[in-house]
Image (cartoon, rainbow, N blue to C red):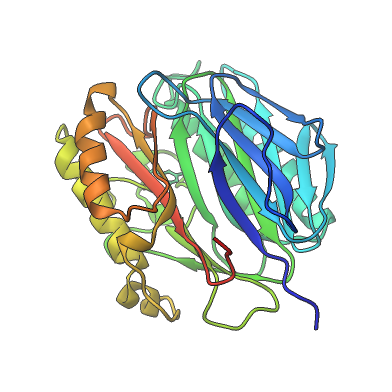
Length: 342
Ligand code: 3EB
């Protein structure tokens, strides 16, 4: 039997070319720096650049690698990379007075690529929304405008698992919208909700005309690997209980609720409720991105994260707006499966 194709990620400095370890290939990168754009690099792989760095916070390149030789390309303004098991797609949308119809068309083009290239299972998405809590030309909040367009695209997407992938929806320090998705061919994503939170796709209408299309976490059980393993992708998580923001104006308590929400989400009882084995702790989280709305809150948020997360968590901090004006912090990360080599 052939070896499973293993996907991994790491954070690298922005300057310099990503150097994967022997036997691995760069699939795609995301540059969290000062610039925006999407292109195939001289090395071949797609790189999405998002303006999200600022003085006092982090700037870094997220490098996705794979054990199989990837193929790179572009279609419909999207850039992609695939390795026979995983497909990485990135796209950008220029600033617009109203985003919904273009978000719908662009995400539909991405879903068509997912289907045409034969990687039907989307297991993780990131949605980077400039001016996220600003107002569009119709007087609607940009995030709600975006969410409605995305929901229309998801309405015609079905991978047979019947659920939405783990995702992040977050502000940037620039304009326009960009996104990245990762899908797989033979692996099976297992989507997980959080017993402390209303599924986002069931949020009531007070948060917008269409509910957000994402799961709280997704476990990717790699094709060909023994059952019970897999990487658990944790969505952007905020200080929300049920569907309501809690601790308005109190960044320390919001950070505590976020960390408790993630601890509950990845813990044994919540995973068992989703039919999954294993259970994890906050100390198991890696590649943690902490989105802090107010620059001056960084020290408080950092201290609480340092205490809760492990010393190897590889935590980065970015100063961007979150999708509700009362949310001060959002945190995402992943729990690597046994297939990861460190
Ligand atoms: C929330 O729980 C906070 O729209 O893709 C978190 C993760 C949030 C993903 C998205 C939004 C998204 O509703 C916001």
